[in-house]
Length: 432
Image (cartoon, rainbow, N blue to C red; front, side, top):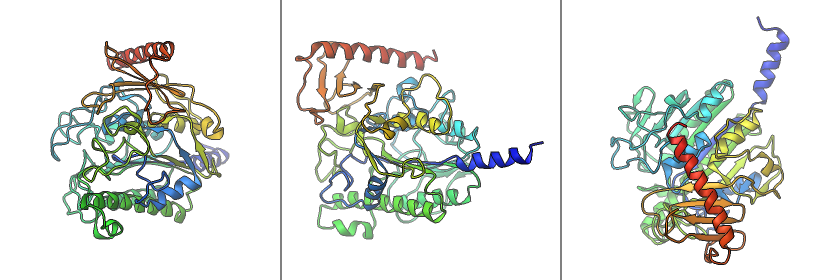
């Protein structure tokens, strides 16, 4: 029987454990926030997070498309290690998934459940189906509850939500970001123990629509642009509602609230048909140029980091798991691609020591299919006979000048490391 002293110690330890929230937009470009300089779009609540907390200016999605990035966020590993190579099927609410998160991959939720956390998922899952031969739903991966969709849905009057009890049959009206946040906040309010909440918005992924109120400030722009800006405005409003709920519950100080996007903006260029903004960066969604993988990245955790800071070192969605485990005093497992970001936040002058690798398939909108980022240097390669490209991201973040012919030794060194990393991913997929 546990002693009174032991019981009180256990209560104290539980009280010290931070609540953890991973919030993520879908297809929001680096430039689709006013804190990153958008000239039209207003995102006051994301701006407030950036002003009060930690802003990552070189934050990378794990991939240039959604499903692989989501897997990296939950496992700390590159998706090519476990076979989620591209976005899952998205041709209908009940179209079967192409990929699923393998049972052998241990997620943040599975680690945290062992530490006394209650875990919930809300919004877009995209890592497997909720029934059938490609099932790999949130409960299968450590979550206690979910109110989620298999893949994309309309951002207004959505349908396609499921819970562990089955498909949601009631008609859902209004903004989708509000619909899923209703469920997330209810989960947080009911939590009797430290919680882990994953809130993955559908906005501003197509088909994006916004209600009259959120679209009103942008009606002078093309209709599609107004809907896009309105969908992000609605998402931003719900992030503000979430932050206020944490304050109302008096748990905001010891809650780690992360925010990012799963990849860059859709489309081949910023036009009325695809109004997403990649900022000053080259490329967009599906591309391994910076615009396809450099995304907004934020963290608020006042108990640990009471003063705002800007981190210029590279960081990634793969870093969530090792950072969270480190914050809880847990040792990270071997075989991760991510790193503990806490030292980089504590000392913003530090540079990331571990490189970042990327691989994708399909139409990359002009980039090569693999990338290797080592501090200031970025190599793009197909690892075949086609030319590689080398960029100095410190001096040329827009990737305008290929330096591979000027620095052949650096290119060769980075290519050798990229080849080694790619082989290690292949071995991981084989279970080795």
